[in-house]
Structures are given as structure tokens and as C-alpha cells.
Image (cartoon, rainbow, N blue to C red):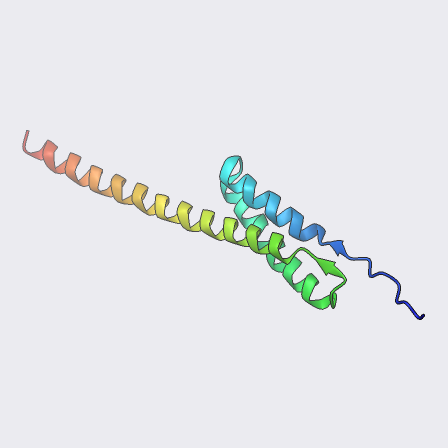
Length: 100
């Protein structure tokens, strides 16, 4: 009856920070939250891989990464549209004022 002691697994704190920051990126801190979610998500996944099964939370880290990357992509698209609107608005507004 040699029973192995139960394995005590902990959840990665970085994975939790990544997920919370990813959620914050969509609600309160768009740019900062997205960057923190991405950095912490990658750090957490590396920590989890190196732990050899002692640390869990890969799903939390992946969710944080997805939320962070999608928020950054969304912000970049909005920025491009804003720049295009300004450039087109200025050129249309400036061109129209020449004829009046």
C-alpha cells in the first residue's frame, strides 16, 4: 500500500492577472489592460510549461491573451478609421472651401 501523496497544484497568478487585465482592457483600461494581458499571458504560459504539471491556469492565460490581442487589433482598426476620417474630412473640407 504505497500510496503517492496527492499532488498539490496551484493556479498561476500571472494567468489570473492576464485574464483580469484582458477583461479590464475591454471595460476600463483599453491600451494598458491589453498590453498587461498579453505580457502576463505569455509569461504565465511559459511558467506553466516549465512547472511540469505543478501549476495550472493555461486556459486563463490563453483567454487573457485572446482578449488582449483582440483589443489591440480593435484599437488599431479604430485608429486607422479615425486617421482616415481626419484625412478625408480635411481634404474634403479644404477642397470644398476653395470653391466657395
